Length: 339
Image (cartoon, rainbow, N blue to C red; front, side, top):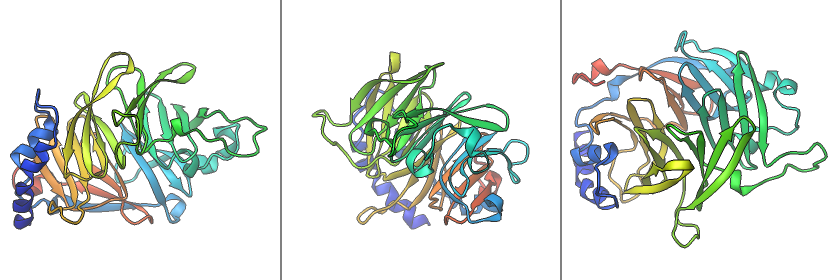
């Protein structure tokens, strides 16, 4: 483990060379400059429970925790909403699309592959999810009942095929920290600004990844809003985006040699999952930093999808497309205090 961290330290100068914004050293940049944790933190993770929907194989494509709520998309439930605040080790199912198909939407052909396989984000009572066909805006304001209120592109009852619109197909969705905007990051070409009001969403702006408007990079994998900025995993890098007024967003830094896949944030901590590739000696796993840019932990797991409770005490992970493992995060076991 110590040798891996020594290898990682050798990459710090290369990583920082990839950051093109030297005005302010942000938390992620500072954590890299300090070097990632030198202590072994594998003992922090303690598996405590397994979650399966209706005791069946549970394939979770996307998962999101906001406050006491956990939102999942996948099979066999389609879309589901769970209470993880009352007892994090025994989440309470509040809604499953598979049990409420007729009340969830008046339109046919809602499948996670179409509308919830690519990205998911939450703002207030709403969840916005995206898949291969487009996006779905879901209202979770009534306890025990989630309702799809809009679909993008719009579906007509007379449509014989599922309509598709690439402008609403995203691999990451994040929300503005103070304004009523979602931002949908397409896999290779641009990010859209999506204003939300009581009528639904309106696409107000497209911002290209590359200055020439062509496909500029590959490939968006996930992202999160943390300390007033967005951090997006582009597989071959992690990019920071800064928010402007009226739903504007612009790239504010590129961190190369960090192969970002899943990125999750709580109010206080940023979890960046790194997948090593040939020629990259950084250890594969999840790196955790705090808002001051202090490296806090290395979690040696590679989930397909994961989410973390708001108090940073439990991590929910799809490790094998069979169930969700609930890990307790025992920061005191690290020997260095931790969180």
